[in-house]
Length: 121
Image 1 (cartoon, rainbow, N blue to C red):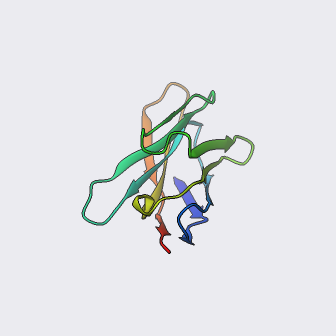
Image 2 (tube, rainbow, N blue to C red):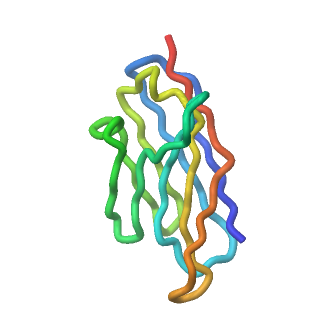
């Protein structure tokens, strides 16, 4: 199975920066895509950013130009660099990884435990 360990959340002032990390471990054949979601109190979980195995990325409109997703394939780790943070970015951020367990196999999604990001003065 797959284990995801997130780190990097915390409290930051508006305009500040944080970097989230999510390390993937366990037994799997390949990682198809890695991404970040977030869920604010009383709201649905939403996609923030995603990166595929070949490095293609996409972002939610609300974070374009401020957040950057990247991955280290050797470490099976995905990062989310968050700049110019706003109070509305406050949420629990979840890592999401899509893997296969054999060549050409079904894709399975796995979630991290979540890390709190609070943007407040």
